[in-house]
Length: 358
Image (cartoon, rainbow, N blue to C red; front, side):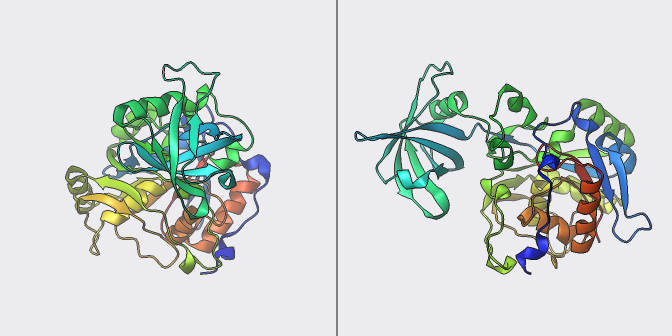
């Protein structure tokens, strides 16, 4: 399909720079394609009332690492400020990273990361550039290894806020909590599974009282979630692979939910993509552990997910293509126009929608 079909205009003031408080006070647009009332304006706190006994929520329990490192190239001739966002671990002492400005780096360069305004026992973190690839990606080999390297990244790194937020303000201590879901367990993401940011303990208690079960999967979110599709046609786009896991326990539990007539509700695009990666053609789930690069566009036949809760996404993004596949492109175009008109807040710290399939 033509990429420009997934474009739309968003007023800059609709981009949320902070989340609402409490988290479940965010707006929730309920989208029911083909229904007499296609859109309903609710709040996230209403979610338990919108689900049924026997339904199952699937959340992503990945944890965002402080993946944005700021430092300088340490050549004898001249120093240059370098920013690197870690994207993929390559062994105990190496990471793939997106670097800028890339033109200031050469293979063999030493980059010294650190921030004098922060107190850190390690002081700085050194890495050498081993490879420079296309699209701004480099391979960094650090002087530290294993847990010591992880400690240094945690001490010196910044929360990797999305570009549309980072361009308008610096990250701060609030983001350490705000940009982490309450389900976060397993470190590895460089972007938050943002639909999960809306949940609170009170909301989980209400869901449990409603008879809605909660199930965890893990997908470590990569930087591709922020990148627009640059090709003119979706056929020309290639997804970045991301590592995920659906345990046997979770797969068996979700199969029982379907067998009993319940619905699988994916909380976010990452949970949906992982569940669909683990699903067989007959809709049953098998354990999954490994990389997935599933790219869902209109025409895809969903195998296992019945409902989807998600935030509002960027134009021309793979995420907007996914929701268009789930609820229909024209329906989602109308839904986004409705959301803009009604003052919904967009993107990672914004409001959410609950989607039914077309």
